[in-house]
Amino acid sequence: MKINLSSCYEHLSLLHLDPENELHTTNFSASNYSSVLPFCNRVYIPKDIFHSDWTEIKKFYGALPYTLWIDEENSSGNKTALEAGFKFKISYPLMVADLQNISLHSKDERITVKQLNNKSDILNLWVSLVSAAYNISLTDFQKFIAHLLATPNAKNMRFYIGYYNGVPAATNMLILHNDTADMHWVGTLPEFRKNGLGYAVSCFPLHLEKKEINHAILYSSDMGKSVYENIGFVEKTRCNVYVPEPEIINIE
Image 1: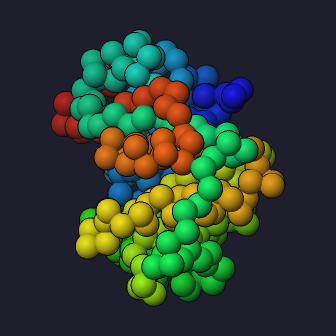
Image 2 (image 1 turned 180 degrees about the vertical axis):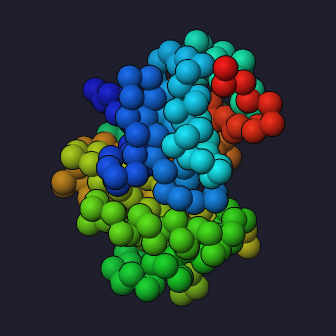
């Protein structure tokens, strides 16, 4: 399977969606969605980064929180982030699937998966489920998704809900880029976990899109990794996530 990992990182960093609110330089690319949720504003660092870059990043975000996303094999980038005062937060497997080889969607009569096409349903029902599954602010996440839906590439976004015995319980979002689908915010309400919803809400949308695209990419939690492996995803690398600690960041 041939796929450009740098391109994967850029798309999973929510880049190339809203050019007016992005910053691309030789050493980093950043997206600013004016969100108070740090994981919504992402800086991708592909190789080396220098202390002078921190000033530019800080100016780009102002008082807004943001996160750095750096391949674990980028030793210089990770080292410089730590030296600048950033705090390591978490590491995610970056996983890739060839959609021609993914497993078939399992048939469980208790589970149905539906795509949402109504903006109101996305901003209310879908957002409320993600917020509950991830334990994040409903109001702030709703503002972020509203921003995404106002971007030029909203037409390439797909929102899905998984239902268990008719009850909305799981979510997924795809963003299509050329022949690749980025998968975001796959989540299941705590009381419905371990019922196959994560598998179904991930797999069914990919089957719908496999005639148009060849690959799917995502960041997985370690808890969800085995679910994606059962679908056909393979870990290609890991991404380290850092958060700034404003009082100690050295930008000199």
